Length: 258
Image (tube, rainbow, N blue to C red; front, side):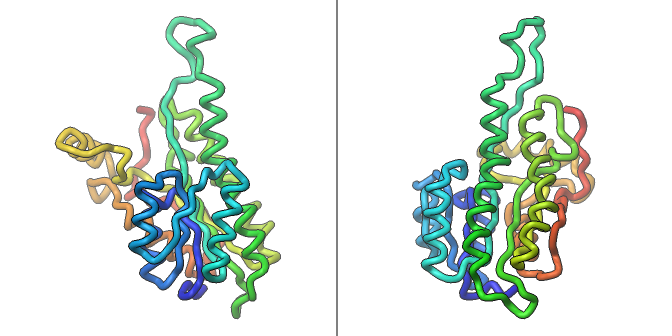
């Protein structure tokens, strides 16, 4: 699929994996909608790459529609990369046998709502407009890349909510790819391992912590770089024979229980 002179939406595009992907897309001649809640980061990034920042809560249908419409106005919308998400670590039960110390159910719902329902919300709305595109030589009208996590397969202690949400993203990949095949829209999912993003903080302590984490990686013994995720996302968008796949990018790590 030719990306040049098309538009794309990157959710969570103001930082981390999303920012790296937005930059890579812009390098390929794509007009990018940075769909995020971080206006202080998203606005200058969009200006720098010749795109547009649209404040977007992925669970808010009206805001997602606004991002889709903004992309369509710039150029034919052919790409969606879903990077928005949150994480939380809480054990299923407490140590005192009290109901009140069990996992907060509202917190569980919130993680599912953003990571899984939010992903599907963006897919269903972006794909609706993609379906109106003129097909390319393969009959393709667009491509979608979702972000799951190795936690979908190797969930650790305390990751019930996060792993459930990311496992759901993996689970929707094939059926949604089948749904959208009739209009020529491909769907793939990336399962990142330990990637160096702002979630780990900054400074000597953060660097030491990341260095320790990197030793558990099979090879190379380091955290992944956001740009390494981005290059894979671009390949999944551009390669018209990649469809309905869930691909780990983790340097061979298999997460231990804790």
